[in-house]
Length: 288
Image (cartoon, rainbow, N blue to C red):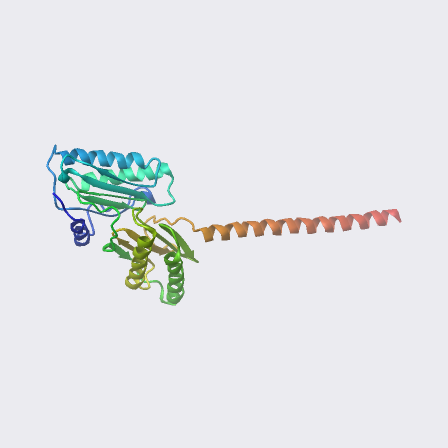
């Protein structure tokens, strides 16, 4: 029963738009892609039982961790099942658990009796197979999407901001990277079983392909086997695509708030000085 996730990648590329591809109630629920291996398991087989145990473990683990992987051993090599899940780095644990549970439920309807399956929602990713893929880098394109070109008058500005933001994402560290430049926001993330060096290699490939293939698009998504990079300009998407605020954005907002408070204090002090000067003149006049 050994099989390669190459067949899963082939399925995803061959059939990028599946009937289940709908926008659900929130940004974490929005369906991005899904696919299944062609090899099937038989009902009531040990593999089916092990797969159920694996999926239960994924859902339970998501209540306290944003990433985990499991290997369920069987009495024979063909009954072993490997799986992982990962949530977007900014999700709370309750939101992560809800997202993973929904992704797991979609694998059941999307991949009945398939030995391997994967579902990517906006907020989380779930994948399982009977051939190990854990810790294996995968830079194959799974799915991509590019928005319409921005207005010609704003093209150079938007593309410049996008490239500047992408440079920050590519040069950043960690498995989750968020950035923004003006009205352009971006997000990049690797699956947690990659090392930092493998993550950097994967994201560099995703970002370069995204820039090359989406050109002057108002938004773009590039999902590789073990990482993704995505960007959008303000109000350019018809769905509820979500980008968490970058650290730089938060620092800028905090700075703006601090500046406003200081200006308010200075204005108050100035008014107090003027009032005291006026009061002194009144007292001096009455004293005469």
